[in-house]
Image 1 (cartoon, rainbow, N blue to C red):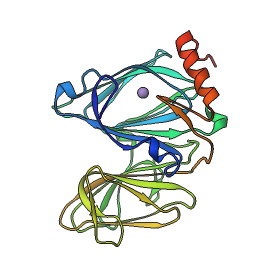
Image 2 (cartoon, rainbow, N blue to C red):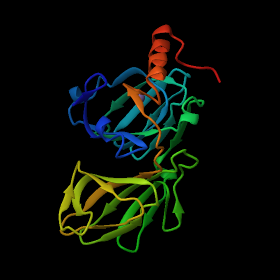
Image 3 (tube, helix red, strand yellow):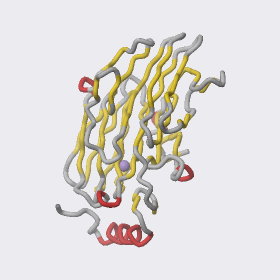
Length: 268
Ligand code: MN
């Protein structure tokens, strides 16, 4: 599918997953090896009521917004943006070394924080700890804790974990899903077994876990790289249109009316 002004996107999580994957709304895997596949980018668009988490794997994303902020997210960098009461921004991906791939996750905000002041948190690759587990996995800890190493993303409403896990062939990774959290893995490349069924999941497959379970991931002859993400469900009504996610239809109408009137971005 195409998003923005024609960026090629694989949507791993979308509207139909809202109840099952609460508090997560969307996961887009975007990238291209052809310029036409991304160069028009994501021109000026509004966000309100949730958070966007951009993780660049290859290439860069340049962003610029209504508060006057701008910057470049490079390979291995993470941007955790709280849209809160509203920002209008543009996001322009570009290749580096002929390659471009990134992930954007949308995480919902609880009703009481939807109109909070917009904030950006940027984490460069070097600020994200890399842990080697006893089972042979290499884990970049963006949010959460692995083997005593805590990731830099903290104080987020949904109490998230976000791990980027690489495993060589014939290795194992175990991890506990917190009680009452929603958790999933999304395979970036290679393949692995994510349960005891003997079936493998490969690139672009989403695996959803039970809350409170211990996940066991095993590789056989192939390596694997996947993200593991968990968060606390909000259990609130979701009203979602375009890039605004609120609790009621009235709040959506108001948001888009403000976009048209030029009063969408609030002073705090
Ligand atoms: Mn955006």
